[in-house]
Image (cartoon, rainbow, N blue to C red; front, side, top):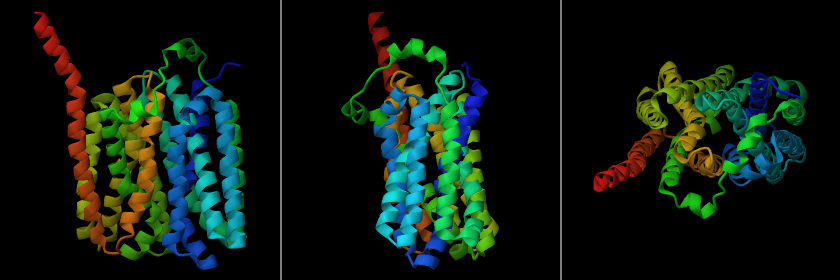
Length: 400
């Protein structure tokens, strides 16, 4: 049966929307603390584990996911995410934080990993002429998933309790991912170019200076954004005195800007290039982090700066697939992108850890410094990209 490429996009968006629920994590903190007396810093480990295993799965299971195809890969994602959320419900019922780490963190994280890479790998193949826009649309849906879930968690918790909320989301999102998986498919024409795929060993990838630069860029860009996302509702209440309703809206709008940033900046990258795009949004984010301590007493200013940061945070994920493809080519795209996403895994622990070092808002200066370092890494990457061009010019002059 022939598939419509636009319906393929819709299927990919639904899957990403489902797994994007992880970014509404901060809305679980208060119910877990209120009902089970779990400390916010301890429960945050569940979120960090989920993002960590998302990145690790993307890195080490990407080749397997491509081999078995989008439908089977999507079904694996649906199964792990559903089991993870149902297991989270059980951990709440048993009041077991370690079971929560296993189910919400590890098991759901594996589902998130499959659910992340399958739509991205698949949809980009249907739009070879506009890879940035295609990946941006799909990855935007991941961010918008947090917007949807941030509005669901509170009412579900109030009406059916914490255990019921985890169970309901597990069943609903699992079913949505099941339907998406059954429609996702590779374009028929891709079977004709399988011979162009080049397998790379882990050593070949991680020793390539261009990969190292890309990894550091993504890591430094993610640290600050993931730190804010992990504690968004709490930050809103503690830093600028938001009430519960305002904090919920704050988390939701963060999800919206995460999505907008992914779509906007990925579209820009198709026009001005990935390197230039990265330098622009990293520079903007560095300035915003540096300004937050000064404007933290003003609720509007704090939110505006945060939304800009989150837009730039999302931009890194939306632009990175095109960046990898631009540098390494379509033949090496899959494995290099997978290993690059391990930067997300590392930042999922480092970012929240740095934010938790102190309750003083001046900690945001540290994230500004990290992004300034990222700008220097970007300049280093530029020299690496220009080196082959310069070498070719020298060879041509030598021949003349």
